[in-house]
Image (cartoon, rainbow, N blue to C red; front, side, top):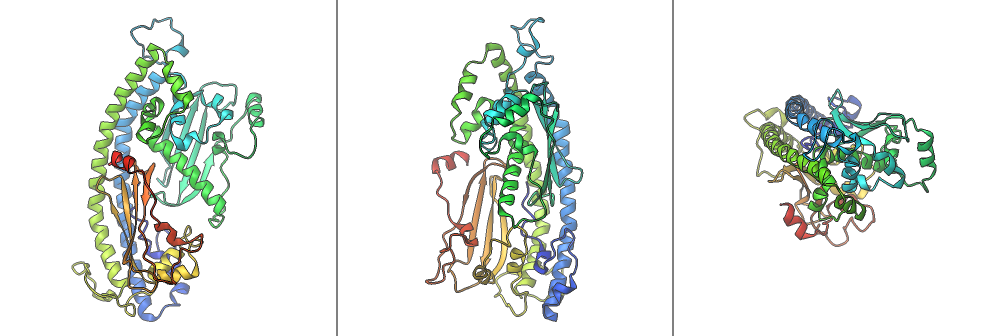
Length: 466
């Protein structure tokens, strides 16, 4: 997932969060004429930016589609045949070997039990049904603003469906804000209904994912917001970690990479695999190595594509910085005059409170920022993000002018992921804010600036991942 656009929504400054920002006369009237003119230039820059972004999404989508169809899918087909005992035999098998003895039993069940994000949703009520899972696939939605998971089940006594689906609809191609989740209505059999009745309390189980909460565009409902975020995390983890690396979660190798021990029941199952099943697992590991080589090649090509577009984005961000902070008048900016550095901020010539408005007008942040925190955010001059050198994460930089709240000129938050798909967060580290006496804003239990609090990390695990 790319994070290029998270700090680029100029429309938010005037309370307009549409994909294609348009001038909102009622919002702009609150500003003086000179400021309105500058905002109009910013919105034009945003339109140019969005056109470029659309082309980036198109090129990135074509690259992803090529690898999925041409390279990955043939490997997934081989895996499906081995797991389900179709057309693949080992040296000790005979033509009369039962079909159920030819595959890898409970493969997808234990693959999902291996990943923490999915394991915590799987309880005794789910296990019987999940052992009939034969395959998991994913595909983009038609507009590329979301994705669909497909869970394929063999005949079982719990429900009639052969395929259960989860479709995640996002507001944009960056998958930054969840719009809604649509799940399949499960046609439970009598055994399945009995299974559901045996559950205790209100604890959610895996099959509850297929009955997601309804969304009414109300992200101020924090409980609903966090539930949707959790469901999205589970879905994206299945898409980006379990599907492409299923055998490593099945064997527990991927779990050990995270310094997490395997469940005792999982380890016991693996220790009792027959010789033939172990040979099939070895075949899957060879396929996985081929897949990982192709994935590394894909990451290199994607990084090169992102770098080429980033040069153009940076040019636009520099123009925006100059206008917002009064370093240059909008009319004087040309394509050759877009780099503005080493100049003092002139609030009278810029767009006052630009970043404060942009943050507060965002659907996911408006409830997080108090009035006093808004006062501190008036001194915010820019927000930047940088890709980490290993491409497994990114750094956010919040640049501040001199202010009465803290000494720092830059506040940072660094995200490091386990892989370049950025689904499994390894660590998130912030910075210690040097508050001036009497002006600390993190005394309250809930504060936007808690976002920057450093998190204690197991350095051994950190060094292992680098």
